[in-house]
Length: 519
Image 1 (spheres, one colour):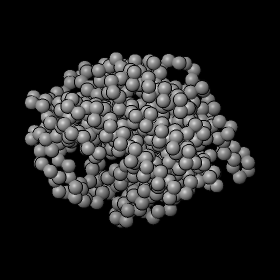
Image 2 (image 1 turned 30 degrees about the horizontal axis):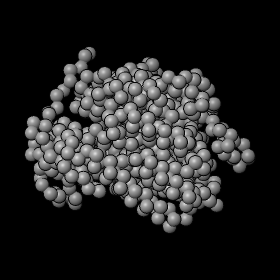
Image 3 (image 1 turned 135 degrees about the vertical axis):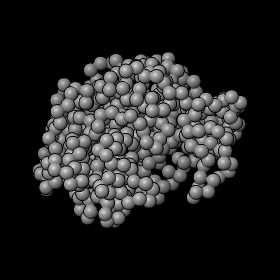
Image 4 (image 1 turned 90 degrees about the vertical axis):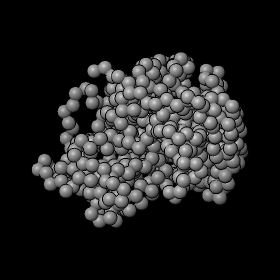
C-alpha cells in the first residue's frame, strides 16, 4: 500500500510552518508518518535557497532520499522554485512544485495518481514556464476565508525593484514581473492545528517581500507581500492553545509588512501598525502564556507596536532585529531601509520600553566590498547594541541578485573566516554578559526536553531538564518529574559561555491546563 510518508524540512520558521501544513494535508489524505528506519512510500522535501549552502544541502537531501529506490520524492519550497531543473535532473524525483503553483491541489492530484486513483492527474509534461516543473492544477473554488489578502495596488508595481536593482536580461530588457510570476494565495492548506516536533508553535501570518535587498533571492521566489486575515490567525491561535502549546511565535517572510501593501516603508499608505493591532488581538486569547515575534526591522518598531509589546503580559521581552552590517556604506549597498543611527536608536527605545530585553540579530560577513574598517564598525555597533545572541553568516552570492554581479569585490574566504571567528568570540562575550544580569533571580522556564544526549549517551543526571526563559536563553535544571511544556520557576545559579544553570524552586512547577474554547 502507498500510505507511509516522510517530510524533510530545511530552512526558516516559515518553511517549518508550511511543512506542518503539508503534514496535516498528508494525514487528512489517509497517509501516516513512517517510523524511524522505515522506508517511506513518499518523501516530500521542503527546500531552502537563502544561501548557496542551503541550496546544496537541499539537493543533497533529495539525492539521499531517491537513493532508497522505492521512495517517491516530491520537492517543494524555495530551492525548488529557484532551480527546478536541477532537481528535475535527479533520477527518481517524482515532481518539483514551485511557490507559484496551487501546491495543495497539485499535491492532492499527485497523491491520487501515485496511489492509483482515477482523479485526473497533475500535468507533469515539460513546463512552458521555467519556474514550473509540475504545472499547477486549476485553482480551487474557495470561500474568502481561505484567501490571502492581496493589495489593490497592481502586482507589477508591488514586485518591481527599484530601478537600480532591476537586472538586465540577455536582450537588455528588465526581467518581467507580472501576475503570473507572483503567488497571491497561501501555498498550502490555510490553517494548522498542531506543530509536530516542537514545543513552540510557529504561526505564519505573512508571506512575500518586495524590499529587494541586493543580496536576497527571496523576493524573486515568494513574490509580493500579502497577509493572512486576522480571523483565520485567531482561529489558529485558539486551536494551537487547545492542543497544548503555551508559546506562539509569529512569523513571516517580512513580518513587519503584515497588513501592508508593500515591504518598502516609503510606500506605506498609513502610519498605523496592523501588526500592533494583531499582537493586541492575539494577546487576549485565553490560555496563551507567551507570544514572540520572529524578526523585525527598526522601522517596524513604531510606538504603537512597542506599546502593544509593553502593555501585554504574554508578549516576551525578546526581539530579533537583523543588523546585517554596522557599516553605513555596506548598509547602503545592501539596500537596507535603515541607517546605523536608526538601528541604535531603535535598540535604545526598546530598552526604554521593555525590562532588560533580549535583542538577537543576524550579521552578514564578507559582503562584496567589505573592508577591514567596515567590519570593525560592525563589531562596534554590535557592542553598542548589546546583543545577547548573534547569527553570523558568510555572504553567499545568489543568482539574479545585484550583489552577485559584484564578483570583483568578493572578500577572500580566509578573510571571511577570520572575521567570522572574531564575531563568534564577541557573540560569546555578549551572551555571557547578558545572562549574568539574571544571576540569583527567578525566571519562568517552559520545559522543552529531558536530559541532554550526545550519541545516545545521557550527559549528567537523568533528571536534567532543559527549557527556554522568556528572554529565549536556554536554562538547564534538575527535576525528576518536569515534563515538556510544563512551566517552571527556576532560580538562575550559574552561567557559563555555553550554558545557564538553575534550581527549580519548591512548588515552582505547574502542569498544563487545557483552556476551554468557545464554539
